[in-house]
Amino acid sequence: MRIISLIILSLTFLLVGCNTPPKDQTGELNIKIPENWTALGDESLPPFSSGWLKDIADPLLPDLIAQSLAHNYNLQAVAARLEISRANTVISGADRYPLIFAGVSGSRRQRTGTSGFALTSNRSDTFSISFDLNWEIDLWGRLRDSARAAVSDFQASESDYRSARLSLAGRTSKSWFDAVEAELQVRLAEDTLESFEDNLEIIEERFRRGITRALDVRLTRTNVASARSNLQSRLRLRDVEVRTLEVIMGRYPAYQMALASDLPVIVQPVPAGLPVELLERRPDLRAAERRLAAADSRLKVSKKNKLPAFRLTASGGTSTNDLTEILNTDFKVWSLFGNLIQPLFQGGRLEAGINRSQANREQALAEYGQTALLAFSEVESALVAEVYLKEQESALRHGVEEALEAEGLAWDQYQKGLTGIVTVLESQRRAFDSKRQLLQISNQCLQNRINLYLALGGDFGQSAVTASAEKKKNEANDT
Image (cartoon, rainbow, N blue to C red; front, side):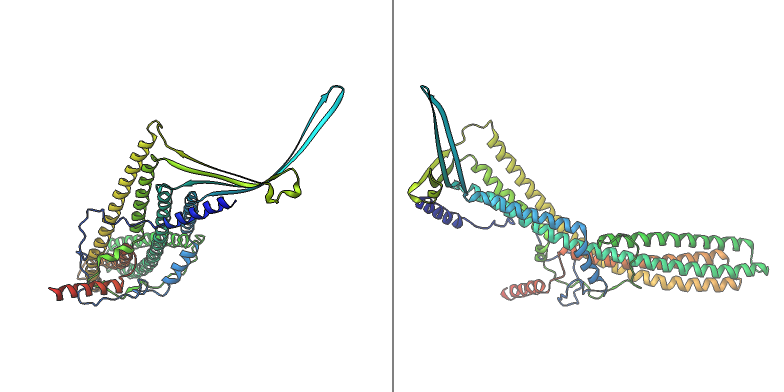
């Protein structure tokens, strides 16, 4: 028993000494990365960061996101997969440690026979307690690499969970903005219908007095019918958006959510000098890198499978014919076996395993590179869209003002007999379209800002921006 204890203790120290974390796999991408994004932010603003929820003035949004994170079923499924990965990591790492079993057994044997005319019977009892050990000594680090691969897989799953949380927060925000816009579009459609119906009453009254023609009445009624149809369409879209948001938040889609009276305002523009290092926070990029690390470890395992394996088997305990003596060390028994197994021929299985692991690693590297390029593209596109959408929104606000003025002038001139009903209807249509498009663009500005936060993996990161500015300042001073 003392020999077995010494073996276990020494090999445990050997395993602990070999336990090192998986290393990063970030230096193999042939991508020329700039220091800053080519799409610039607002140069007039100093670096800042107050959290991306604080960048959007919406007091209801934080609570909505909190409810989604607490009740969304897709996120709960991702969390369950994370726990599965955690358990797989423990299972894979268990191969590095000895398997120790304890057992108690008892048997009774009786043999009956004849000797001449006499009947004989022999009975024997055997009782034992045993401790057995099976251990593959990790001489080449094959089991260690396998455990490292499992750890990398778990780290990738952790990043997947963080990515799912961030994505869910973004989806909740965007769905909320869509629902609020749908509500505002309904109100606009109701106001437009009411205005058109008021105009129709005036035109019908003028027709009864012989001031206007029947054609004017028909065209105005057509306008009213079109506005009524548009209102029904907007009501349907609002219903869809609200129920979609309720499902995202883990609720039954009962259409029982109160909506805000206006779209929130983005209180902070994008600052200039956002460092590319911010992208390192992206969970999906981190997950891709960890999967590459796992593939690298498994490639090492497949190569080491061709090396000999050393296995140790040991057992010890007591064996006696008297149950009361089962704990008496005077009846101890023990055994120790070791064997070395070298694979010689397996029909090409080992070489194929190496080739497969190499291909898996190349696939993981390519997917990592593609994920990185997609991340850069998403940030650059969101930064550029921020500028375009801002200009488009400004132009539409001016267009709404002009369209409302034109609508008022056209109606005034129509009542004076200076213009026809077609001009009035066209001016009304343009005013309605301008206000509808302005609501859409305002929502798109919010949606794009959320896309930018998702692309960066969070807010604008004041510490990272400040560090980048200090680095550039020091480099300039050195030159």
